[in-house]
Amino acid sequence: VASFAGLVAFPRMGAYNATKAAVVSLSETIYSDLITTDVKVAVVCPTIFQTGIMDAARGEFPAEVDQRIGRRMEKAQVQAPEIARMALDTVLKGNLYCSPMREGTVAWWLKRICPQFVQKHLTTRKSSQG
Image: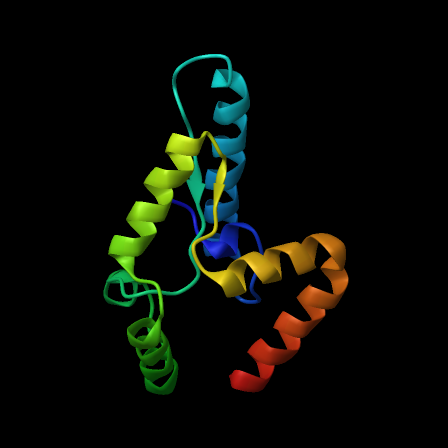
């Protein structure tokens, strides 16, 4: 499991973005290497959903950021059971990418079409949110 951050890089999250991008790249490589075998590979790139990531995170986040992320996790339309089901469906179909959330898929395609626009938009939104 990678993350949406492996496909679209967010400001001030360099280490997280890089590790998730590495998971995507490794999955793409293994997929290509094993495509003629019975071994199937998929990379799952969800956006935000309920996890324990904030509890396990190193460093401290301002309380307002922690609360905002918590609210977004709770409100997410797609949660872990649906993501797992979508991931399994992706593998069974022989597809490589699983982007369970619509907003993630749209943003990923937008980034592929207009990368600089997306990065500028993320930078502007991130800096205005603190």
